[in-house]
Amino acid sequence: MSEYYNIVSIIKYYMRLMIQIASFLFFAMFIVPMSYASAITLQNAIEGELYTTSSHPELYCLAMNIYFEAKSEPIAGQYAVADVVLNRVNDARYPNSICEVVLQGPQRESWKTKKIENLEDNQRQFYPIRHKCQFSWYCDGKPDKVRDGDAWRKAQEIAYRIVGESKFRGVTEGSTHYHATYVSPRWAPQLDLVGRIGTHIFYRWP
Image (cartoon, rainbow, N blue to C red; front, side):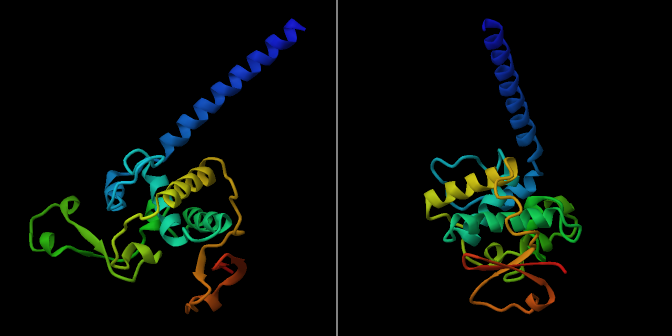
């Protein structure tokens, strides 16, 4: 009997060790250039947030998209919005990182740097063109302020779980697009309808 418990203890030890290693590798994977981190910093500090834009910028991007696109949606609807972002990351038609997908859209250079002829490219400042982004909250001209701390922490948790644990991954069955039920975008008839979750209708490429 003692041998049995020794074996069980050894198995539990190695399982804990593997979990720790997997967690380390997971967080190490989601570090992107700090230019993206600065682009997505919230305009107000949130007490008790689970991680920051500097510690895990990719997850932070995803959490921001969940919050601003779907904070009033049921949990399934929030996971669905996150799932669409990850589907785009895995689709060759879109950028291959979470932040690049979330922030995708045409940009214009700031007049402050545009007037400097010999300025290095990496020192120039660019801003998204209003109402031209893939996700409207990023370039709607409104301040990106979190006013609901609980909803923000929930968005961060959802981002972590869908990426790190694959929780509800695939809930949209490969969707790369969605829109609210009260709008009818021109692109909708060109895609295959997948279904509705909350107040969003989801589509994928034919």
